[in-house]
Length: 333
Image 1 (cartoon, rainbow, N blue to C red):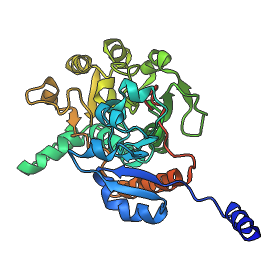
Image 2: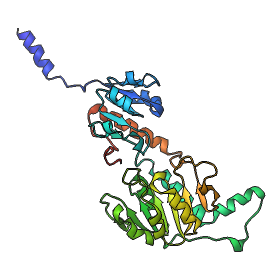
Image 3: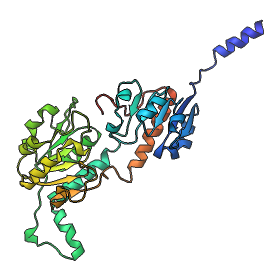
Image 4: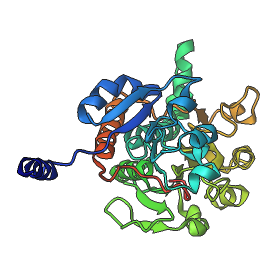
């Protein structure tokens, strides 16, 4: 009897091990499963296979890479979903949005390369490179007297969306000597590189001040089409328009009209609506419109940040710790 009691007491003081969890991993995360397993030995990792996902997620605690109404209904124990992209608009279906299941994404970590891309588009326009570079194939140069360039120092940038991308754009704009005004629904503290922030319902008060407008906000029902005919009309003549987050934030027909009427000096678009932009679309005809195929997220540095975020969140989830980059599913960011 005493021996049995001693055994029970010994068991009572043993450290409690975290409960076994299961994570189904899809896409780019599959290659990281060996590293995940080392960080989270109490987790069972399963490489998701197309066609079998509904069965694989039935008892899963988490899914990395994808979610759909079908998978959500199948995953009865689901607590966490991680999406590899920054935008989550394609995953905000009602059952998921209204649930307690956590959603994390790649916001913030994509900021540096997207900001670099935004400024490459702007500089290609302001330094007249959009006219100079095409001449190379014919071994020609434009005459020095025909070369036009705009100095950014002293100009004003209005940045729509001051999250992970917008903040990085603001840092670069400030370094170029620009005044930076942010547009964001959040209360953002003023810094040395952002001089003023207004909420989206006051965007019309700052657009007339902008020499360049950057679009770096997420796509939500509230932000869709927020830059329309009135907003382009409010921009000063000769302003530049740069869009690097989602094409549905601006109304394409209104942009075409502003370019047709020479209201804008140029536009740099990594995102369009529709996307990809079809042949014969009106935007292709403008020499002063630079269009890239939604590649601003690509760089030699982003992969390491993706990896670090995923591995860190897996370790946190295994230990029951708070996750990074949690998305407000109702707001969409």
